[in-house]
Length: 212
Image 1 (cartoon, rainbow, N blue to C red):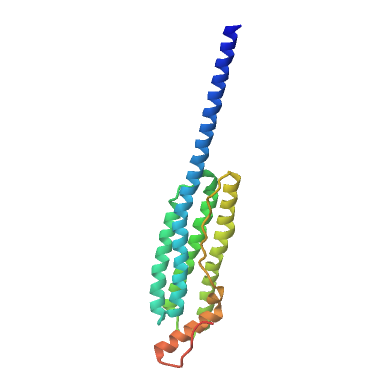
Image 2 (image 1 turned 90 degrees about the vertical axis):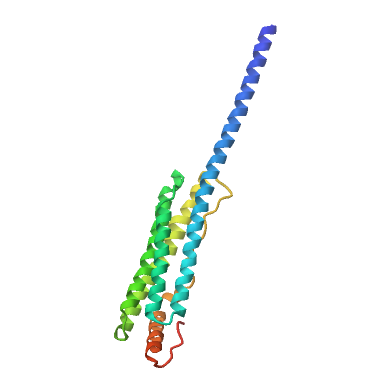
């Protein structure tokens, strides 16, 4: 009977050891998953916040620039910064479950590149005779920038948040990135007022106060 008791005791110890190591392994796996998502979102945060700052810079350029050429030059620089954000986003190594969402992140940033660069190109070619048409062209590019926020929020931020919830990852959030803080700035009417202001400044004509 004694050998049997010793055997049972040994089995009980082995089971306890296996359970212990199983819990340790599970805990390590959970920590590793959390770290992967957290590390990825930290890198996304740098891109997202930099892009948001670029959006504020676009608004500043449009409302304070003294000539179309000066604004276009500023927008060129901002577009280049956004290209760098696109490259950084493409270079990310997201957890497998977030790879589809990361593609939408790239899409959102690419819309920002295109919108800002196209605005710069339009401003370089604008004339007094084409003010109304150019204002509408600029507004069309403003729509790209507004759309970039929708793509980021609805096709990247929301799905990525849901993936982490499904994976049981807590304490990690998807950063915000709002490029357009006021859509009123990007209407055809606002751009027409801006172009009239710029043309008035360049010719010394009547003053137009700016965007409304």
